[in-house]
Length: 283
Image (cartoon, rainbow, N blue to C red; front, side, top):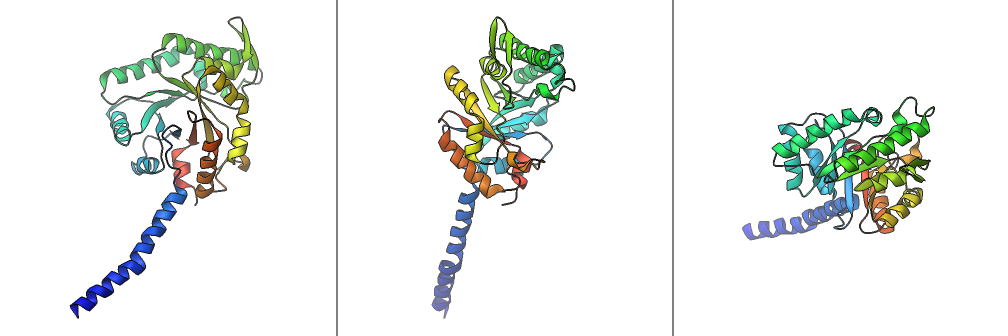
């Protein structure tokens, strides 16, 4: 009787448990972007109060770098950097205010705080990820050329003053204005590439091909200058559904990111905006 019970138990495991495990594995695989060892998968992390299960989610989905918003540097920040590093994820300080464009001293104050953190803690940021958007200036359309000139000057000064720090910039896809700066006439986004370690392009569209097509000029300049570029994808609920994967959901997003990775060079990457909206996407 005992042997018969054991045999029935084994059969039950084979019939029910193993298929269940295969189903779970298939589900995880379907919804997991995975990690390409040569390609970045970044994610914006705007709220440093959220729980560590978001970090576990990032790791499970192949994230290699986090852009972590910090207004005040402290032990909690250092602990997060340590936790992420233990999961083989690099963390970059995410910051940006349009006021810095016209008031560089405000930015220098924040840079000094960043450098103090880097000096006094063991778990360090891998660099800086700036989200400084000139179009947020209320007078941008009235003073467009002037604001863009000042923006270019900001990137130039940062390169001159902090050339030993990895500095990346978020940029929109429309920075095509030709501006004269230091005796040159170039498109605004070209100056940003020149003055940065890398660029993340907010190439927000809801298919791999459209994202790639939207970014062609910037990709070509990245190749020309041997700079790295990440292509950004949007997941939050916005009014224009063609710029976000919010409507399509997590499974479709995963499919399109995998497709996008086949279109871009191996040393380029993808960045997802942002960790909470990505996590909360419907399947």
